Image (cartoon, rainbow, N blue to C red; front, top):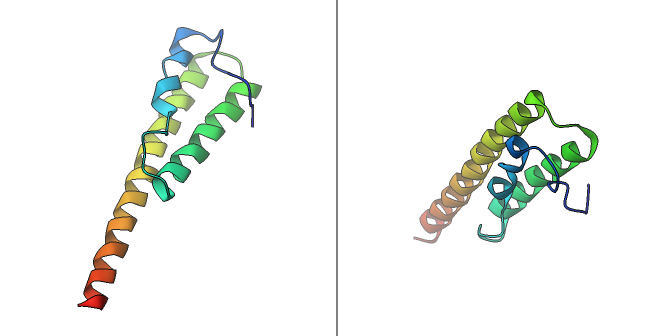
Length: 89
């Protein structure tokens, strides 16, 4: 994964996505880990692909996928908590 700031100097249609891939605000655990993994993939793609409409479209779809995966990780955590409550009662 690219460790520098791969967003610097990119087209505005690409840099628009940088704050949307941030994950520090998420709770630790699976939601943050999931978001971080997808953000890492975005950085990997930025390190090998040039700016263009397909990169912007790909980042948008990757962002949509990240949102879905993070929501599923939150739902899974809730489901596990409910199951644990039912077992203990």
